[in-house]
Amino acid sequence: MAKRFSLCKVFLLMSSAGFLSLGQTAYAAAFQLWEQDGASIGNYHAGYAAIAEDASTSFYNPAGLVRIHNQQFVLGADPVFTDFIFRGTVQVNNDVDSGLPTLTSAQGGNFALVPNLHYAAPLLDNLVFGLSTVVPFGLKTDWGYAPVTRYVATVTSLMVVDISPTFGFGITDKLSVGAGLDAEQASAEFDLVGGQGASDADTKSINKGSGKGYGFHLGALYQFSPATRLGLSFHSQVIHKLRGTSAFVGPLANEANGGTQISTGLRTEFRLPASTSLSFFHTYNPQWDVMATISYIQWSVFNQIILNNTAGVDIVGGGSTTVDNLQVTVAQHYHNSWNYALGSNYHVNEKWMIRTGLGYDQTPSNDRYRNLALPDSDRYIIAIGGHFQATNTIGLDMSWAHFFMQNTRINSLTQIVGSQISTTNGIVQGGGGCVWLSTEVGHCLIKPSSFAFTLRCICATLLTYPTTYAALRCSMRLD
Image (tube, rainbow, N blue to C red; front, top):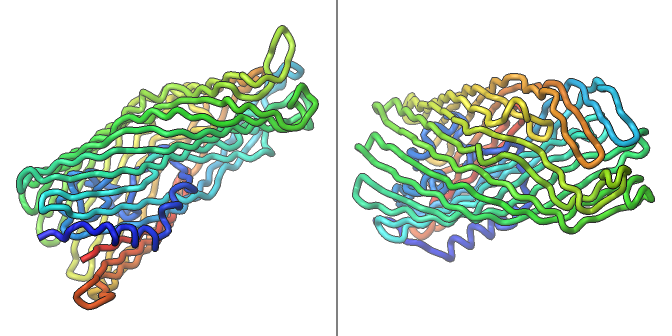
């Protein structure tokens, strides 16, 4: 019989983890983040809508919650390090200077923390409640203020925190369904530098906004046999309407009198794509598990970013002047894309297990409109991992993955910001791999016959274009 829901334990765990406030301070360095539990890199998230082995299925596929027979708590934190370089030319024209293309190189990179939290609690034998707090979308690029690329982009960031209560319901012994609400909070920043002639006129444009959006996700899971199951999940499109402030800081602000010019009416809107994933998991024999996932992401809804009511310099009546109602349009014109993942587990014996994974992630970016703020390209992924169960209560995991990236080309892209016109032409380069190290502690009795938990902690390092990841994950099973 399933263990029943205990609200007291939920708040005890959340409070002790300190996670209720953590999600508000995290940033991520990739636009869509697939792994939301910090533990699936060894298989490159293959089978993520069908495995349903812990509370993280609440976000991946809530139908898998019916496989959870005890309360479970999963906490993760993924430190993210980005490292990439742009080489090429940037040409800047404004009302007092028509510059020639300038050869430059710029180093991007930053540190961020991507958290995730999952909880599952059986309510009835065929009804399970789940709760997830994740960052399904995020990015941060920082080209700095020294290179000439500052006139195109300095800091660009997006963080989407998703809080999702879900329910999984078993219709029969083989078929289950699930649904969840996605309440999202988005925060974004789009910065660059405005100039006129000499660099001592450089004025920073800092634009920040935040807003809420709502969506849903659905799932179904069919158990063909104890060894084989198929999962289908759907995450809906979410529309975010952001409001915030635009600051123009430096010599050109306030009709070139300097200081800080503020617009409190900054507005923008963007759509995050719907996605559909089909996953398969099969235990071939006592030694082998195989799994796969194919995902279709409807990125075509992400056409452009329009910043309304920004503070800056514009051409008015034949001359330049500072305004608070400048409109800036950054075209994207993304196309729908696919993601594929294939993985396996090999159980060497009761103590050892080896994980492997292969993947292909298609970029949704358009060659004509790719820009420095959102550089991206297709990537191929290989992954391998291992698990060692040292004792009944202590285990060790290690995984490695490598992302093979094509050079990302920016093809003479012209960007207009008020009186300033810039053209970027060049290549963004990078590459790398990953190493994961984890320890697992299980079934540690805190009070005999009254409280037990399973604790898994995963520490990971991922060196990959354009990011380096590290992850910490803890999961608890309450009996």
